[in-house]
Image (cartoon, rainbow over the protein chains, first blue to last red):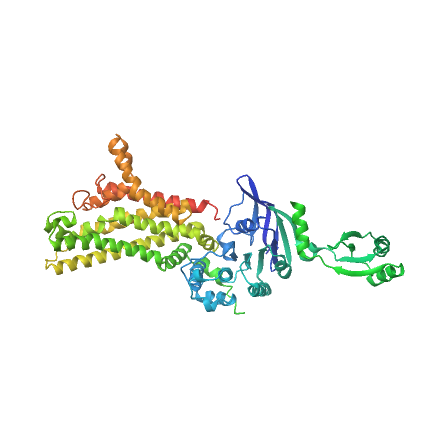
Length: 302
Length: 297
């Protein structure tokens, strides 16, 4: 069996003359949590819809469980929540899930288990229409969990959840991953992806601009030094790091030397600075947050 | 963490997707308030126009109170022997409009609620999901015909008892034809509703267009056909012409004092039945093709 549970090859969808999704190639490995990142309107949901057979690609191919997307066998092994939950407003949470379960040939036991996993048991007999946004979202996730499919496709699952709800959703995703289920998670919330995902794909303007691990995406750690006089400090740091440091602004009008932190003996560099008569105000090692990377990437692509 | 149910996908594959879909859709239609509201409206109309109003006219002895007509004829229309006509008279226009609303809402609302997406991602296949919904709507229409028949029969017995009339059973062949004809007429309008729901992908426009067609457009076209030679060949083949002619052929009065709106006599019974069958097939085929081909947004 292939270790790619989802793979796409130059998947493209045009609406009118506009490419909503433009030649996306991505792979999701069995058992991982894959983060599908991008700003609103980047084409995340359209891509997921194509993987579920709801939308027919204009060109390109995709395979889910090695099968054509949207085929009965692929869908039976996939649970999904795409662009908000779609339920009958007049039915209770339990009845809505029973309708879905009946389509899958599952029973009441599976419904109760799914409701329990999203902590909705206490409101399960209330009509869907009376649910809060967060509860509707959780019922959507419960429907995706029915029958414990190998692959879960969750489109912005924390939409509408409060901080506590978000935390429990992240816990749920960890648990699912620990159980060996593969999760394909789309999000525009970077913190969420940073905490949950093994690998990420970044889509901007319909095009894939990065695919790899979160660590690779973030890149190297940065060393920041604020010291005066700047020119003398720059010379010392260049000697210590073996490469020139950039002069950047710290946002408050002060000049900061920034460079790759790898291979720099920081205490030795500080001693050298002091020995050269440089006043050291601050030395810090910074990891780039995914947010920085993401903003850089989306701005560069635009 | 509870025990895994990994055997589920293998088990379901053996199940018949169409049967699962029908049961699932039936479950949500039966629990839908709109189903009961529309069914109740039909039964209320049937009770008012077939029994309450004629009875008031009869009891007050004022022929002008209900469209005139001889008194014994009004009483006859409420007795068991008149059941074949009573059952079918209201179906071409009023019953048809009600099941059209029901079917159009069943398909159209599934788009506005986003439940098509939920259903189709469970893997039944689009044909089975559409077939399941069409079958479930069909079961509801059949249920409506059955309940309506029982209620109408009960009321006619009540009138006979209250007025101390001898109970004469209807001619059973006519009675069976009337029940089947009602089913065919309502089934045709339900298929039209499914089609409109699938075309417009929403409840409001589909219901609006359907009602505009049944209550206004067909009558206007028939009016125009009286002015333009040859147009009547086309208007005789409209869905409402088929439905009205079948009801007319099965005994419902098409004109005169006690004529029911929508009942016609432009086609013979067999012609009308075939026309309705063709419409059912065409509307269902178009519904399947539309749901199958289009992206679910």
